[in-house]
Length: 296
Image 1 (cartoon, helix red, strand yellow):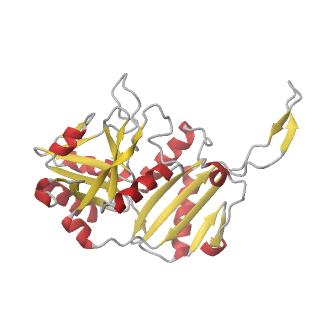
Image 2: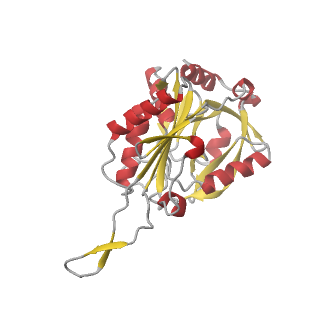
Image 3: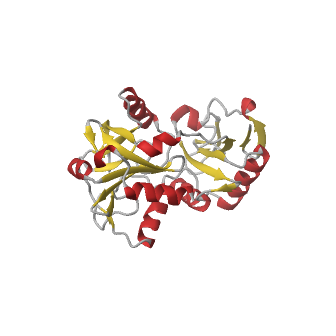
């Protein structure tokens, strides 16, 4: 398999970043995971725009040059020889271990050199999920930790993913495929690695994502998912009612259907929240219809 790091192609086994890279040392960085089908990257522009917006808002570096990055992704995909693939872009603040250089004319104090960002792209075969997972649906647990609206990094796809991965691992220990997160105010946020949808009386209900908050409201610590946006668009095209709202555990448990979305699964039905059965224990019609759209 081939990777692309800072303008050079390398084999996966030879891919390296420096010991003092900010991503390795401090988790300072962003990433995007995308799916390619028959040589085309799904939601390509939306993924890159989200990455660029986060790099700017979190001051990782500005501006992120989207066009050259898109070309690098396409070249890496082509070089891999894969038509169907999982693609990951990782951006970090680069090598932070360089010595102080130069001086500030006003203070005569040595100034740190500006690190060159690390940009890495790697391509691998896509994860193959069993059809049964989507035909029968999955169980989810409730994460023990909480998302904090005051955390300005929440709602961005940063490298600080340990809490999310830990929640998924704990979910797996009790036979669940995903862990749902609530905020510190006990409002539904998202899955650990997915967006969450509720269906009630035919209406799609979703938590507010970053950038969707009503005027004067606290920042939503929810990633604006690319597949989430697609599903919302499809629902609106169908004339289906869509509601963005502050949702509670009662809303979750009262839902007729629940499903999850991300760029890897597409649309994944949920049939159980811990001990609570959803929709009679089978995927509902809206989740099935949205999955068919995604597959198409």
